[in-house]
Length: 267
Ligand code: 2AM
Ligand code: CA
Image (cartoon, rainbow, N blue to C red; front, side, top):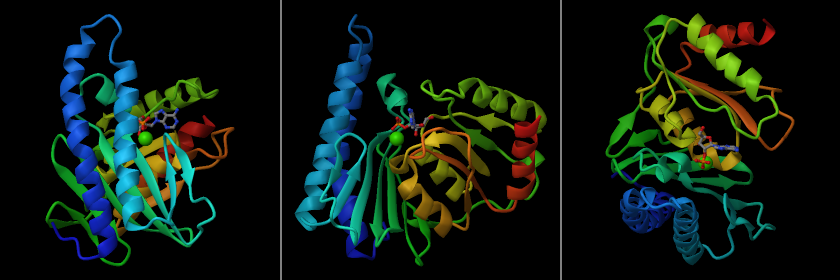
């Protein structure tokens, strides 16, 4: 693992510690699925436990740094210089169903700018990380986005629709339409953090999803950019200004994909 900076080491150690209980919890899911109650409460507890371990470790290293985390919200809100952005389990629905595709995501902001990110898939033991100006890495290797420059040779991924979205029908139609329009396979894996990591690693050529939260994408933004990828925020499409619509690509297919998406929106 090429982790040169103290900050990356802090994030990495926090994620490794938290992932031990997360992997154990994932092993319990199968048993709970056959119970009448299902694993819902258990998963919420696992989410909170993971978050607690990560936060404890990060605060141990820097007691005064700010934190924004999915379950707990904000800590040390007044610190605008340094802030961690945490998603303890991204891909919760996968986790809940015993599907081994989810990740811990931790980003780091300096004066409001994202400068570091690490996404750890504990089941596949895959770590994606980056620090601004130092490139992006997958485990021990440097990663770059793919070089594909034609949509028809690409493999794409998306997510959603969100159940609470007032625009869910539009979003769903958009997905169906683009599947018909684009002569390329489209995948839907259920984790925004891993979707972005896979674009960074050249596994996907593009990934888009509407109405994501900041903690879903913070670490992914740094990793993607450092791997040479491009993120575009698509507006509007939401009534809630805290949600983000993102289109991430290897850069080369951006124009073609965007044209396809925009065309669908005006039809
Ligand atoms: P989660 O697993 O942490 O909830 C799947 O489509 C992606 O969207 C995942 O990254 C998931 O994160 C996120 N997601 C699911 N429901 C969401 C919602 N209501 N608002 C924002 N993001 C959501
Ligand atoms: Ca998430």
